[in-house]
Length: 476
Image (cartoon, rainbow, N blue to C red; front, side):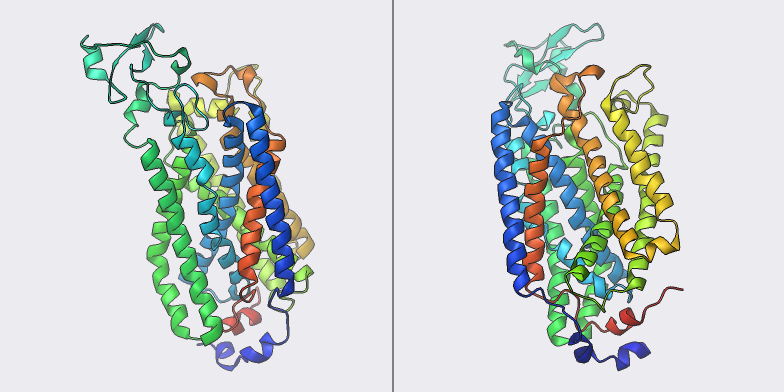
């Protein structure tokens, strides 16, 4: 133990500042829960009124859900990093991140609409994921190079390609025209992975795993507030290595299923890391925002100081650049391979060399390039910005806004991709009240869950053995 740890008086310091939300927790919980409930109800009503089988609702819901999950994931990853590196500077802000990760059980429940969209798919009427449609009894329409339609025999809802190729198909039944372009050979080849039962198992399984990991760290951290047992710190540090690997795998699978499979033709081995890199930025940004809000409310006035904000700012700056590196690497690999199923995904998102193409997502991509990378990179470069709370808070909010726009860029282009084809002129941003209500709904429930748990324990670790080091920390 360090000199600061050996002589630090926990009890005296804990008595010098407000570390409990107290009665404010109930009021904040009530307001945020009401906003969440009203937002979800309003979104469901608008989704029903749209008359499209809740298609627009599901896309708006996925957009908001994918964004909020990155906030919880960013908090959980922060906790894992601090334990595996045995960091002392971050003790006073670690509980904020622990509470962010601890919202995963609620987020698991909020995944129900995604599960419903997959399990209630109708032939020719994809609500969210095209691959989730039940396959027709009569087979699947697929086209040769001249565009001539051909029918294959269906076996238990699947197409038997060998029999179709050898002219042995029997009892062929015409397939609804709405199916044309929706289910094709490539999707059928992936059917062993992209099917409703396995999707539900994987998504829920990944979220449950993340929930258990987050609960493990929060439970032991809160227990240490009561006992001061150093062995709890050792236990969390030892478990971190394997748990980081498991969480990385879980997040990768979740991103593949929830986002990448919106286009079942497309794939990128870097997509999981792209989603995670965005969550790193979002995680540090939301920690900075929450720390500022708490201090504005009179909490943790002495525990979180300029030195802690400086380090949080350095992390935020570093991961802005890291996100840009991952984004460019993914684009470069897709561009270099030049495969139709991958380049088409980029073209739908406005990254296309087609002369005169009128795709609004081109402007979204440009906004993300500048707003998520180039501008904040310059804005956060200075040491002085990182050490000034108002300036750092501004950039944290800025990056959260552009991180949400990045989720828009990932999700919304597939809403215009109807019946497997869409002209460039048909692409729209499709942002409106439905997206706002979904964000307010899921975001409100997320905040309510954070506040509820924050009200049941201290806002920072009270008897962590390195608390003295955190308070004595200074940047060089």
